[in-house]
Image (cartoon, rainbow, N blue to C red):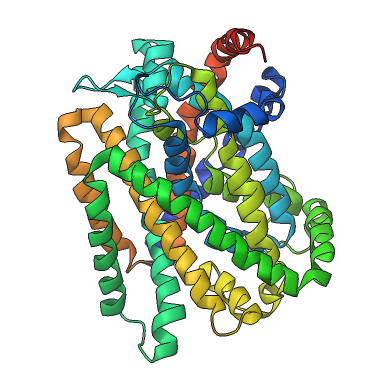
Length: 456
């Protein structure tokens, strides 16, 4: 197992090298400037679209704008915001959060383009049903000659969509917060039991398809964000005197990296810290990875730009708000310096130290909702990738593999799960970003037409 861990870690480090960093951040900056900062200029209009002002039940698609966003958020607002932030701070210190913010701001523009393309170049699966996502906007927007790139994305998506990190961290949370304090030792049997329970819960929803997934997500996501937000605000209020200090430390540490504990990269510790922040940011908001366009591509709309504007709200909610709240809780409570824990256990310590007795149970409830809702969305993403490769009539085979992976992940180590998903997320980003950069002028042409028609 140690040799497997090492191999997977080397794979993740290799694919997350300088070329991918340039593609994600450099490409994202290019899209931001090409867009003339549209994601930030039309936030008000995006909120009106999200509220349903322009909904038309006769438009093509399967779900409304709100359901599309919450389905996408149910996968992004998950363990990346709780365990992923803890991992970033444990290794990189407070400065890692600054580079996660950079990833989130650039990600707003990236999502505007990728999700506009998901509607602009929708295709049809082998059953004749309208679908969206990178594999479709590659083939429909760039032509059949680019199909190998679409297949590459889909193959990487089969692994990248597996829920192994979320399940692993939820299992750890249940064990640390619920079982061990009540005298139940962690064992293979206890972890396996948690995995089987998650399998059953997930199967009930995911086997019902995108409509059932989106309805479940539209109910769970607002609830989990509000509950988590209120819990964190209580903790920050209790440590209000520490908040300005650590907000300042996030900025100063971003450029000094004096608390970074890993190996130097790209010429020094700051380079390694930037890469860490970008990786954790990408894992958190998934901008440029290509998962969100698969959810937004199912939206009921004839206007690609509307869906792009709704999609760009995702990184703002996910990285700029939820990740920041998690980071501040970990920092102001001091557990990042005093605890030897990592991942979700570190965040649980922060909650328990501030709200003794119930804090860790509040986090467990949030984590459970985060993880379970993520399980629903990722199954949809993987199924779409399978449909594209071998046909929609065979996509149910992926769901069986997906459900089996839930059980496997519940009894596997954190490190191998994190590196595995990191690596395949990186592979998914390559075709997504290349095609998006090439097709960006098409999106801007559509945007000029849309804003002209809307007199905005």
